[in-house]
Image (cartoon, rainbow, N blue to C red):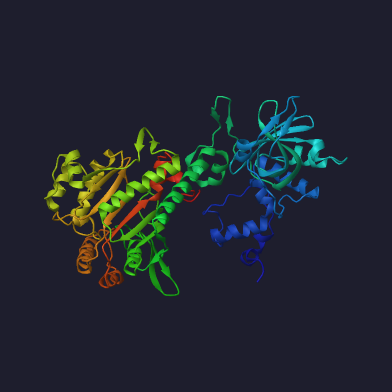
Length: 560
């Protein structure tokens, strides 16, 4: 068929452009759609256009790349590089012994092989001190020309190392560890290998002797869009994500030791059940049916309890087509687990044990600094009913109020509501607006109204309430738990009430899941379940104020 550009317009296909072209949707080409124009323009203009868009530094690096190739050196070698030590490992464990005559003897790391990014250099004549950064941190290396070039040919040092390397390049160094006269643990290079040439310069972040940072890579939008750069130049960011992994590992260890079984359930669901939330909708072409990205995995995990498992858990990636702010992202991680023959009192005790262990494993202490607050994860935690919480912080006793009265309370408290909201939603709005932010230390808010909790067992002794708790920490919900509803008739009626709310316009109301009802009809034992917001828990344990700081790649608008 030939080149699409030629099919569209042979004249443009053969044109040589000598000025910078900016691609805009209003580009004066009536016969060519914008997106197609982009395709053929890049194909016809090629490298010449790209070079015109490069910064001076990027052009220089590409010129160096060509010079490296001209020397017969592969700037992107494929072979395994036999790394046997890390920067932090060497700095923490290197030892040497000084004998009576003053001679130093290296006791370990006499054959070191390390690799990482070149982050700083200081050249003095025929030798260079440099900083190499790997996944664990930085270490100084010492490269002397005659050591890495013992023969007459000094090209490796004079041409490659001294002139063609840039900050950000990946290099490998073989040699031995020693301590300099300044007392710094260093790797003396005897071999050097270029492992990957970087074509874009990294931001240069400088730190003085007092620890002051200059030219920091700190713009949030740039950091989130280019997390790969953020991780390289901001060591504290790497530490945040290491803590997140420690958190996950600690939870897994706790649950596995108690005999829980980790499982996987569907992300694509025919009915978005298990929570009150607006779903993302997609379409399955082969089955020709609409599907939803899961808003929760609750109903599938309960099916497994019906199937005979006593304790199941899942780290679930959930999706809710709702607003975004410092504590909400449309894609987020939840830990949910369900345990047969337990209730919400047992779940509160288990939650306390789990979080105390997690705080210790992640930070080495149950006391965690979160902003201006010092939070103590040591068990036990306070337990307060939602009605008592509302009465404490609003002065209103809403326990016996109907929908009209609750609307009047919202009006007096200047809380915005709309006609789609039922009794449960109104109570939730009051608590969220006037109470939630007051609970800094871990606190269980318990005994919710039945209208707020369509999947929860009715309270064994308090009419109109259910056996549910939410765990509040630092003014935000971190976990939600129930004594699970296992009465299929009651569950059907609750679903039908949700349908009525949906018909009123509540786009967060639950769908009727007939298959889940069928599962309950086969019988589900008494069960307690809980869901933890892992991202919010990670925020707490790493002292981050924004959810974007604990997500490697938070959702963002397309770049302009």
